[in-house]
Image (cartoon, rainbow, N blue to C red):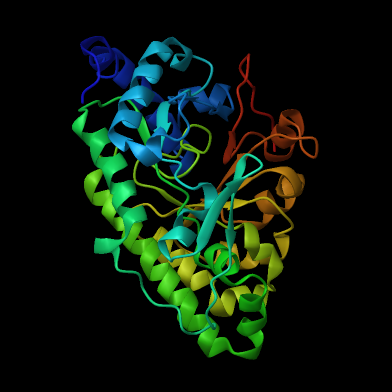
Length: 351
């Protein structure tokens, strides 16, 4: 099953690929704090388009057909990806089982209800988690079919977003609820065992994707809105707000940093709650190159901007707690990516 000739032509258009790469170069300059004429005049913003299949279940029943439908949809809407004001990458995303993709690989009962995915915890003791047999795992087989079907379509323009692989602590809380947090204090050896097993799986999955998806197209989750330069990874740090800075440093930060180290340039952590007590730990993680903040976390942008390293970039999803204008005023537009569609150039301020 292959996409149409017209879609194949559109999604291999050299001019569109050159335009995408121009924006990637600007983003690389921002990450590397290198001179860039565009960045001297404008704040960087990103919000791309996502190719979809209108059959939500098709990815689970016929992933090859789902890839074709998503790419055809992307080609049909490709003009929406062109902008001289901001980066609007053309993307497709393997969003299998929502944020519970890794839970299901570990054997958790994952189910869809009220328009989102949930999971039930594993009925096992903390400290007994086993590494799954990936060769025989139907969820991982499905994920690989999606990725390989994308590669086989031979299209060079679209970015390919991964399933939500998440992070060791996020998955640990999904699999064991609050018991994993209590065990980190009462039985740290057992908790450390399971977190290490989880992180090994996460690293192995990222490594597989790095080996099979072209570097210019591989993006972690939310590929259209948290787009990073090629060669950067990502993890979900939602649950880090539940642990102290001492506990995070002692039991989790090295795992998170090792996951980001799978990628040649390190990567991003997603934050959406009250995580500022961890800034000193984030600053000390050598492979942490960006934080993405929304909602409650976005309100603390000043603390992140002042407390993180000068080579750590902030992705701001504007919200009621923090507007674009406020974020730009705080940062002067430096080390800042606005993750939202804009209708006019945003001028950097002075900071």
